Image 1 (cartoon, rainbow, N blue to C red):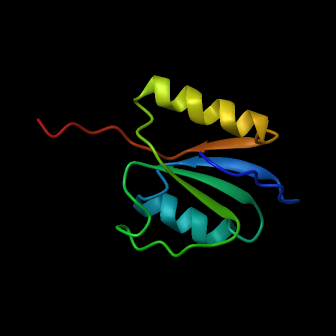
Image 2 (cartoon, rainbow, N blue to C red; image 1 turned 90 degrees about the vertical axis):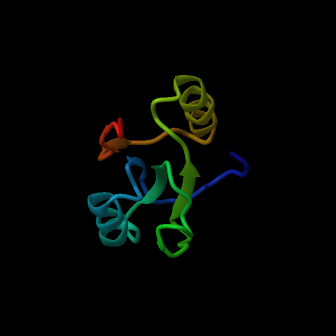
Length: 93
């Protein structure tokens, strides 16, 4: 994760940002918060437009090592106020 985001808006993390509820949440709150949007799929694949207050992070939250790397980076950027957990677990087997 590159770059520092010095938004004056409260910072939050939204997991499951590419899902139905997640993408609607992003749309509703992108003007009120700076959002670190966690999703397994790429932003362009799920047709979510870029926005100055959204930092898209393609990540599987089941990968604890990668989550730690990302969270450490966010902490260095000042951390977040809230985590909105909207990711669901499903198994295709």
